View: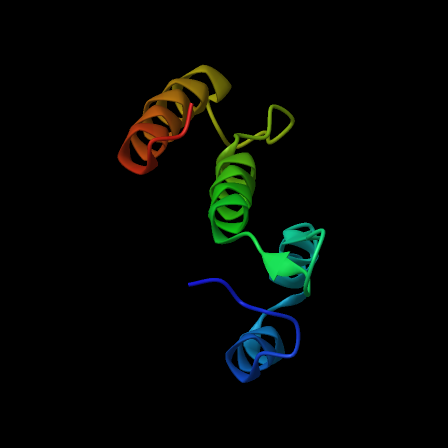
Length: 88
C-alpha cells in the first residue's frame, strides 16, 4: 500500500504515532515527477528497524552491566533481526 498526501488512512496513522515515528515517517515522503508525493513504506520499515537496533545497543558507560556480554548479545540479536527482515 502506498499512502498519498491527504489520504485519510495516513492521517489517522500520523495522529496515533509518537514523535520518533513521525520523524522517521517524514523522511519517507518522495516527490514524483507527476502527481502527489508518495510514502515509501519499505524505507519506513527499514528506518524503524534500524532505529530499534540502535536503541538496543548496550551503553558502555552503564556501571551495572557487563559490556562485553551485552555487546555479544546485542550483535547476535541484531543479526537475527536483520536476517528476519532481509536487511543487510
